[in-house]
Image (cartoon, rainbow, N blue to C red; front, side, top):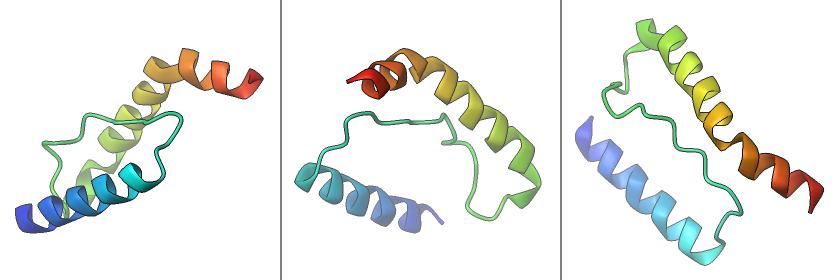
Length: 64
């Protein structure tokens, strides 16, 4: 699964370099494996926490 993560990271970086996003949400999920479906609640909670951390940037983007 780590080779898939590396490949996905390179694809993402390549796309972002060509068309950079205005805001990047990066939930801390590095310990989560590709097939760890039993960790869904934890992943969702971290996604929500990530949005909360980035809320000022998201709000600024909404008014601009």
